[in-house]
Length: 312
Ligand SMILES: Nc1ncnc2c1ncn2[C@@H]1O[C@H](COP(=O)(O)OP(=O)(O)OP(=O)(O)O)[C@@H](O)[C@H]1O
Image (cartoon, rainbow, N blue to C red; front, side, top):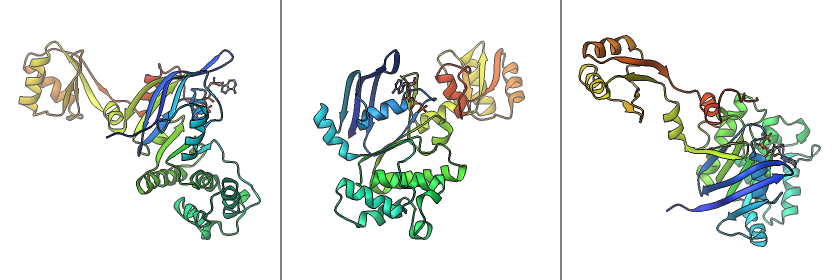
């Protein structure tokens, strides 16, 4: 049975004349990892700020762990940990000292949580012992920011652009950390990013947003399916074409689209063989192209064309 821990009903946020979020309807299920993808200005931070209570909606409703209403939401937010953009850290303190400040501020009695959390995010003594945070790499700072968000063992972890500025190694480390958290603690994770590629294989669900509008929700396997390389084949007779492909070339991995286009997922390097076989069987080919999106081109396509260049 699915356990929905966050729901938005027509959640809308206006800033004067800017419609930052336009009737967002969303469900977040416990235990999953969500990627919240949109270009700069799409509305990701605005939604996160509404969820964590840093800002309030113009209209619509927010439910956290089944509860709504100002006071109830504030209570439920204790079950959330978040890092919005760069974490606020004391640069002259060590990682342990930074966490100690947070622990006291939040009234967490158990001192052991500091070591446990540092270990969990991979900032052990060897790396951070006496080092002041001002000497940390960006990746280490992000880890420490996540440690702060995790100190009270939240059920939902929300990270706004945690991979921003990280190098490929840093991104890979972040991926391992988040997957571990999700697997070991069952933490539900929501991460925003403006680059689909960065979250690929980190999250299991993708939520695409553009200009405040929720464009599409899809799973990792749906995304893979949509981006899969294939030959797109158009013919004058779909049934005869399929018979020829199956019987003569033994092609089994294909899909017929509603407009009659046949997507072939094998024999990708045999376009000539396919066309000569179909010709011999009297099938006229009206179109044959190699297709398949990269993640980025799929995303651009979904948000309305190449004119939206992604900013990096
Ligand atoms: N405090 C504010 N006052 C006025 N407009 C705002 C405010 N905050 C955000 N906006 C506008 O709302 C829209 C959504 O912004 P938001 O920061 O949520 O986008 P984003 O997807 O998080 O982008 P980024 O990746 O740049 O952080 C933008 O048009 C932005 O200019």
